[in-house]
Image 1 (spheres, one colour):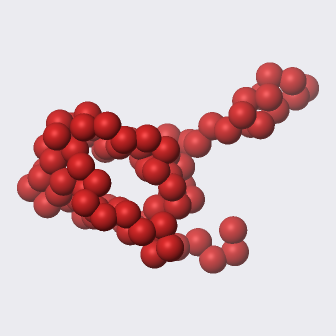
Image 2 (image 1 turned 135 degrees about the horizontal axis):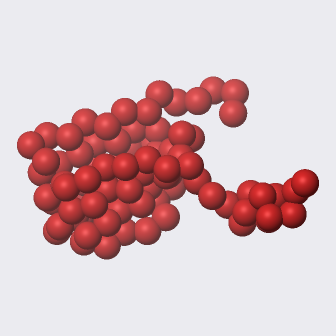
Length: 88
């Protein structure tokens, strides 16, 4: 990835959040939104979560609701699982 976008999260009063450099949204419910950036997966947990705006072109994700937790993890793809299982 030659030109990585700078990633940031801005949370206001645990009621809204704006995330930048988002490349995909894997799943979303009112209790959890799983977004993807170049740094990995971002899980936002809470209640009454809604996606207010999503622009993959600009990398912007805006959400509203009660935010209880934000966590990052490395994105695990099917090919990386096979590599770990069958690589030396």
